[in-house]
View (tube, rainbow, N blue to C red):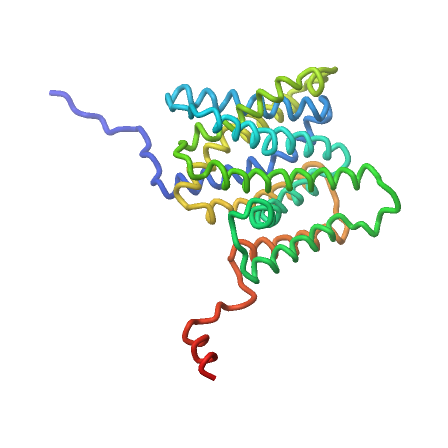
Length: 321
């Protein structure tokens, strides 16, 4: 007689817990990316940071697509659209953030990254016309813009400085992300493309552009250490690879509104790591501006309202009067 020994294999976590863990991991990795960039810049150039980030991300996503045997889209126009968002959504913001962190703190860069929902709502409405804003959302955009101005603190600059240009570069990266979301909504969201191939196509097309730019952005002296190598791997394989896959899983489980709440986590993680690990400090206007930006995000994403919608019965009674 034989006896079946009890299984020692742990049971898979319930789906809702697994999605929550992916969401938290995504917020932690993306929030930490500003610290990783700061560390990497101690031994490599800003162009090499962006180059390694996107190339490693594309390799990671490509390996996942290959193992899972998922199909890529075939229409040439779709590849052209992915080329656009690969440049605007990866190449340009990665270069801008890496360049900016030569002059601004990682904490401040993470705060500027939180401006993305404001730029997305603004561009999706005015440039791509894929959304319509109510009064509360329009007010949220206005408050977010004011908060961004407060963060920049233009009253403190008599002339262009590295710090000011670095902040403008961070803001430019947030605008790039806003363009990417609006463009994707306008030209790609309606197409039947699976999540992982979608992420690979965007990052992969950006990687092709970055490979073409290698002589310009990536060649130069290197001073690699263990922390620098780990930071580059984390930026690429995790932040631009696995985190994209986690984001897709969260998006499918929670929807776009739920997935977008990662916006509230990443700057908090970035600020905490910047202060605790790098000893970064703030001036009074930066946290005040950040609070205004978060208020703008809450209004823009319809999480709070300044005005209640008027009910049809109330409108009718007013018309009778």
